[in-house]
Length: 165
Image 1 (cartoon, rainbow, N blue to C red):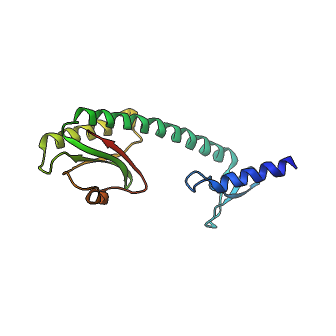
Image 2: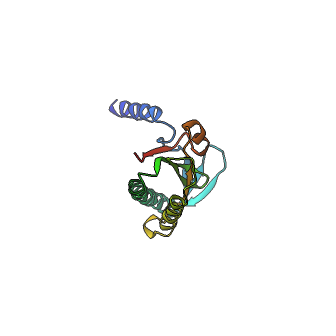
């Protein structure tokens, strides 16, 4: 009875999570040292058990490395904003195509070559930092505008706002 209750609680826990948190459920079976995996799309593939374990471990390590690098990145971006506080109205870290985007909104509409150069230098440093080798960042400075105008540069599902004030 306790096993049934535990399984029921685990099932309810999985159902209450968002799809991003929930593990993907795969059907699999063990045959002669190989795992036959059938994901929800129905395509079957065979993987050696040892290889499957290695892949799962590697993915866990990579996930932890990315988390660590992401924290370092956000600290570097916050530091950069604090150094450019007089020129930055707000900034956003958001998702882009195959990269993260750092969108910086200037305090003014007029182009600021110095701020653009500093932002390019930041991008270059991040791209060449061995401690951030899993991070691909695209940085862009925008003129002062309403959030509605800026929203076309943002992925509404992933936005981390920074404030320069």
